[in-house]
Amino acid sequence: MKLLHSSPDVAVIGAGPVGCVTALTYAQQGAKVLLLEAYSQNVKCFAGEWLHPPGVQILQQVGIDLNLKRITYPCGKGFVIFPEDGTTPIQLDYPDGEVGLSCEHSTILGILREAAASHDNIQLLCDTKVTRIDGQKITFEQRNQGVTHTALVNTIVGADGRASTARKILGIPNQSIPISFMAGILLKDVELPFEGFGHVVLGSVGPVLMYRVGAELVRVCLDVPRYFSRDPATLWKAYNSVIPKTLQPAFKQALSRDEVAWAVNLFCSRVQYGRTGLALVGDATGYFHPITATGMTIGFLDSDCLVRSQRFEDYQQERTFRTYVPELLAITLYEVFTKQDESATALRHAIYRLWRSDPMECRHTMQLLSGRETKLLSFSRSFLKGVLLAMAEVVQNNVRQQKWLQIVRDLVSFNQWLYIPIKLALLRAKKLLKIYFNNSKITTKILDIYSITQNEQPRN
Ligand SMILES: Cc1cc2nc3c(=O)[nH]c(=O)nc-3n(C[C@H](O)[C@H](O)[C@H](O)COP(=O)(O)OP(=O)(O)OC[C@H]3O[C@@H](n4cnc5c(N)ncnc54)[C@H](O)[C@@H]3O)c2cc1C
Image (cartoon, rainbow, N blue to C red; front, side, top):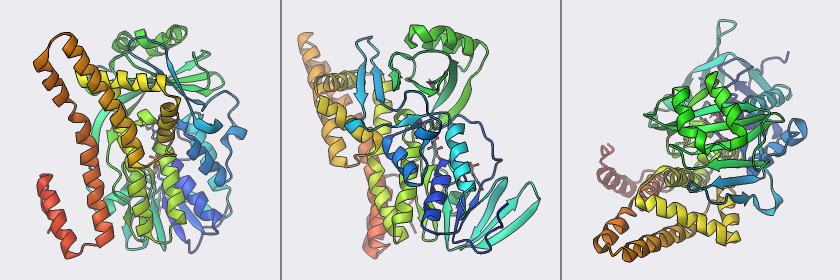
């Protein structure tokens, strides 16, 4: 048993995947790290299981090669999209031979916690809940021993997930918006149509995501609309037709035994990064629908950026810029895959056509998806190409059927695809104005005007 650091340089709240990577990155730089986790060592929960190549790379930087350790099965090659109309599946490979990986969340977490616990510079305390932060003084309760400690630490990092205590202490209101539920089902001894790939299957009440998480285990994630029944028989009726035939018996059996893990999919824009001396990373900064499977990869990139940054402001600025596109991509893809109106259907078909006809577009999509490419211009170019193709299709269909008035109505319905990017861009612009001008008189004025246009209370 290691002795408790008498004066740690860094305290990390939460030993989830991002907290562990943050602790390991600081420890690698020679810092003494206190890593505090509210719950016990062994957890089994349904959360992130797919890592994109940049996430795998960050793990390698902190000395963890999951591929060498536990992954003995094909995974992490890219994604295959199964269109709702039953046409040929579309294969999207990671470019330049890069690979990601997929395994059970508990496996990733177990390996990361093991690495943190065995590092000489890290003190990992489980069953230890952070209850207060006053300036740089942190208070935590060791629940198994019934004792409360305080420590003075130069750098505190809130890596405590969606219900972050650090966020609450910073006075950031809970702004999460429910999107849908995710039903997680494990299938034993089945073969996927495209082994090594994540399968995104459309055509049911919500998208279905499937990937291998073990030599004998395949994960099926059903996106279940908020007001849809959670009864296994109803789930079977709604989703069985899109599940590949070879998986259907195991899928039916798992549902009949009610072996379903549930999670709620929430959205909270990633615009809060804390303050000097108390930075937020991972889900504590914000989160979105897991359709793009990027939560952990983005969180690891937060850790890497935080430890590299000289000042808190540099970290905040870089991550505010670099997480806009991944967030936008997750929201847009989810909307395109779930909405059924004319413009969404046309947009989906336009994207399929782009992927089928242009290998450069496939490469570009995978760079955006993996978080390698985060430039807004780059995302907008592809997205607008899709929107223009979709609009052209809608016009052609209406002209063919001589529905002249419908042309205008359908074209107007495309404005919804501009609303989300603009709303998110305004949120970030507001944050960046604050960072750049540090609440000068002119910024205060601009922010007040912004608040009024967004129906918010003007700031005092
Ligand atoms: C259904 C689902 C599927 C997903 N799929 C993917 C995927 O395939 N790929 C992907 O990259 N992402 C995915 N995600 C997102 C991913 O799970 C999260 O982004 C990731 O777990 C965030 O890690 P974190 O360490 O920031 O937070 P968490 O994993 O939430 O960890 C936070 C930790 O802090 C601890 N804690 C909280 N409060 C305190 C306190 N006061 N004191 C001490 N400790 C505290 C908690 O116990 C917890 O261990 C998915 C999410 C969901 C819901």
